[in-house]
Image 1 (cartoon, rainbow, N blue to C red):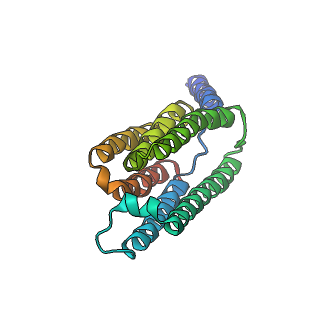
Image 2 (cartoon, helix red, strand yellow):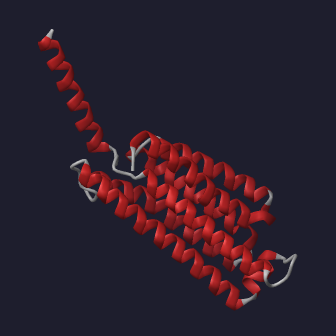
Length: 207
């Protein structure tokens, strides 16, 4: 009986070792929650800036017709992105250290590549949309390409990332249909969904 338990423990250790070799399991659920909070704060500031111009603005004409406002919104987006990335890296590094893992190992590199390709492609596509004046599709494109990036990276991390990817893609398609509400859908996708899935990951895997 003891020998059988020993075999089971050994098999469990092998299984965990194999999982660690192919999946980035030090991803922090708390980083998702904080990223969502940053996004909601950023969206709230953007909403205030846009509505301070006129009570019922034509959002896209206003955003891209007012150079000062466009710069302000760009700064907000960059600050939210940098804060989310730095928080995610810091918390993931702390969690990896507790688990005796390295953040920048072969699995981490695969995850970064799988995320980067769709995100860079999406960023270039969005620049093309802007160049052709298709500004109303910028927010939906952000959500769709972000969802595709998560889906592409989900093979190298926890399964909740895959479902978040599906949710972002679906929300992006809905946002494309109701294109006049881009900022609202952006806040839901990058804010509410991040908090929701981050909370689920935090409860299941810890900080």
